[in-house]
Structures are given as C-alpha cells and as structure tokens.
Amino acid sequence: MHSDLLLVIVVVAALAFDFTNGFHDTANVVASSISTRALSPRTAVLIAAALNFAGAFISLKVAATVATGIVNPALVTQTIVFAGLIGAIVWNLVTWFFGLPSSSSHALIGGVVGAMLAAVGTSGVEGGAIIGKVVVPAIVAPVLALLVAGISIVIIYWMVGRRRPGPVTKGFKLGEIVSGSMLALAHGTNDAQKTMGVISLALVAHGSIKPGQVPSWVVVSSATAIALGTYAGGWRIIRTVGMRIIKMDAAQGFSSQAAGATVILASTHFGYPLSTTHVISGGVMGAGAAKRLSAVRWGVAGDIALAWILTLPGAAAVGAGAYAVANVFGSGALGPLLITVITVGVLGAIVVGRRERHAESARA
Amino acid sequence: MIAAIVDWATIGKVVLYSLLIGVGVATIFGLGVSSAAGLQEALRRRSTGGAVAWALLAAVCVAVAGGAVVIGIVVMSSKS
Image (cartoon, rainbow over all chains, first blue to last red; front, side, top):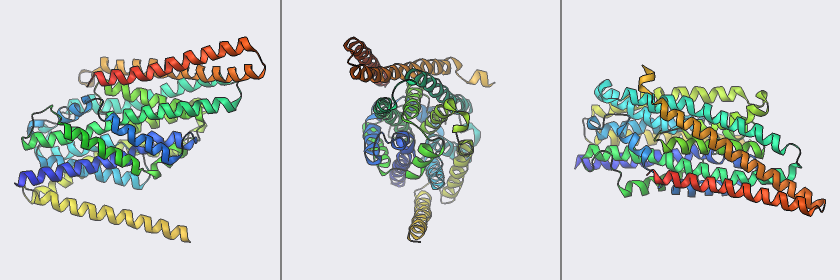
C-alpha cells in the first residue's frame, strides 16, 4: 500500500519534471523563429508542443540509457528516484527564475546521481557511464553545434551575398519553420525519453516491470506532459536564447536550428542523453561568431556556461538533500509527501512573489 | 583512464554525421534559397532560360533538403 502510494507520488513528480522540462526548454526550440519573426510566438509554441508530443513516440533508446546506464537499477528505490526528481525540478525552476537556459537532462541525471550517492554511496553510480555518456557528450555537443552552425552560415552568406535581401530573408524564414520543427521533434525524442526512463526506474524499483521495459502508458503520459509544458512556455529563457546571446537574422536562425536538430538527432540515434539547451545555445553562438566574434555577447554566454557547469553538482546536491530529509521519515510515502508539499509551497511562493513584483513595476 | 571509458568511435560517428549532414543540408537549402532569389531576378529581367535554370536548381535543392528531413525521421524511428 505504502509502496503503491509512493509510486504514485514518484510518477506525479516525474510528470511534473517533464512539464518543467517542456516549459524550460521551449526557449531552445522556438527562440530563433520568434526573434527573427519567422513565426508568431503563439504559433511557434503551438507547433513546438505538437512536435514534442510526436517526437516522444519516435525512439526509446535514450530512455533505456537513463533507466539502466547511469545508476545501478538493482539498487534503486522509489525514494531515490523521487529525491532525484526533486533535485531536477528545483534546479530547473531556479535557473528559469534567473532566465538561464540550463540543461533539464543534466539536472535530472544530477538529481538521481546525488540521491543515489546519499543512499548507497559510490557503488550505486555508474561513474564510467556518467563520464562517457553524459559529461563528454555534454562538452562535445555544444562545440559541435557551434562548428556546424558556424561553417553553415559562412557558406550560406557566401552563396546569398549578392542576392536581394528580401527574397533571401523570406526563404530562410521558411527554412526556420522547417528546421525549428525538426528541432522540436528532436527535443521530443530526446527529452521526453528521460522522463520515461525515470518512471521506468521507479516501476523497476516497485517490481512492476523488468529493467529495459518502457510501458505504453509511460510513453503517452510523458509525451503529453512535455507537450503541455512546451505550450505553457518559458518566455524568460526565450528572451535569453533568442535575443540576448546574439541579434539574429533569418539565415543565422536557420543555420543554428538546423545545426541543433542535426546534432541532437545524430546523438539520439546513438543513445546519448544530450542536452538540447547546450546544443542550440552552441548553434546560436556559432552562427553569431562566424559572422563577427564581437556579435556574440560573451558575458551572457559565460553566464550560460557557468549554469551548465553547476547543473550536475547543483541538482545532485538538492537530490542528496531531498533523499536525506525523506529518509528521516523512513522508507514509506510520508517523507516524499512532506517534501512535495514543502517544495510546491516554496516554489509557488517564489513564482507568485515574482509575478506580483513584475505587476507592481509595470503599474509604476 | 577517460580514454578507456569513453566510446570515442561512436562519438566520432556523431561528430562526422553531424558535420556532414548538418553542413550539407544547410548548404543545399542555402543554394535553394539563392536559386529562388535568382529565379525572381531572372523573371524581372524577362530571361526565360535563366528563370527555367534557376527554377530547376531551386526545385532540386528543396527536394534534396526535404528528402534529408524525411530520411532523418526514418532513421530515428528505425532505431526504436
């Protein structure tokens, strides 16, 4: 009975994380299209939500990596999964609060690893897999996207340099719609699977399924949560990615999105749980730097890089803390239930307080 | 130690595929946009031959770029 209630709490927390993932990462998918006016904000977010939903059904390879490759599934308990999710949700909302496009994927992995370390120590964590499948791709992917976008934009500028700007801009705006759609699809394939992986971990710990299985209801509910989160939108981060890193033209928007989509699809194909945020931010920087190095606001890029570096340890610390608190109340559902209530209360107060301050400053 | 942990061969494939496909598709689409702009200029000059050539090149580029998108989705779904 306690175990069933705990499973329900974990699944709800996982879907809440998935919602924040869509909410947080909408920026990556739609920022370029919105900032270059290829699409209206509402249309861009609607397309992204629909394609995130569809993308979640395409592949389950990353879900398997998250479920079995990062921590030892035999040692996972539902409380560990819950604490990991709390770490990820808190980190996502803190970085959203500051408008920083950090990685939801790394927040999730960091949270689960932190909770595992607090629960069973280093024996529960697949250190080699974390370095090989998370840390190294996290360094390679944004550099790769930067290179792909940079080389692409140099070639594109060379090809269209003597053409009239009107038709060229119109063409690349159309291209942005296609490349942005591919990016949304890639995001759905990559990010929704992480939630599927975590729910699967909880189901394995509950004894409902065997490691490596992903039930259909998990796929459908994860796809729905990420699509709803995407539709709700994270406008603060859209501003950072779409306008604060560089001031983009349509060709740069197209090349950064095409580079991001290609790198994410290639990585997902080989089962790497990649950060969409890192990839698209790298693409935007590449498209800006290839035009002119000073076009990139390196101070903003530095803030983003700092958030990336802090994500794994930050989410791990929150995950470990959440596990320690939950463990005080034993292995039942009471600890997670209390932590959920406290987390929702604190985060809700922060969000409402922020909105009230915005409303006051708007009135003034 | 890291060299032993990391599957560099697979990461190398990710890098190679991303560079080839990413730059390739962007270049082909860029050529398509350039050709479409060339088509407009040829029509304004009333150059029928030029217009036909630019239209053909634009159509081929858009078809190739569209094909790449479809192939990308098919490859993704075949790995599920």
